[in-house]
Length: 126
Image 1 (cartoon, one colour):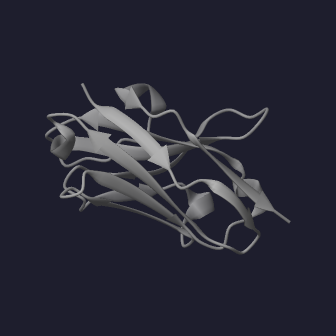
Image 2 (tube, helix red, strand yellow; image 1 turned 90 degrees about the horizontal axis):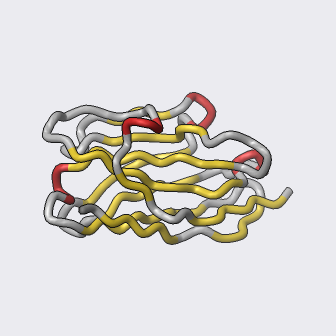
């Protein structure tokens, strides 16, 4: 079993930055592909970013390219999402997700993930 706990959400003004963290626990935590998703009120959940368990393969949705950076520190069992130049449209609950795999792949489809965190609220004011 893999457990995920997000943190780092909060209220920030447009143009500001936040750094989200996802603590990963479990015996296979070093072999999990990770992803970030978000869901705004009244909207469907959407993919944001993904990283392979090895950290060498990364993928972003077009709307966050150049602004968000996904990374991981396997020694600390933590995945990060650095969010810069935040916009009001980034306001959402952000979820991290994990998929157990030994392949160096990124996973971008919601249904393919095995484990999910509880989410952390990000609010960007104008």
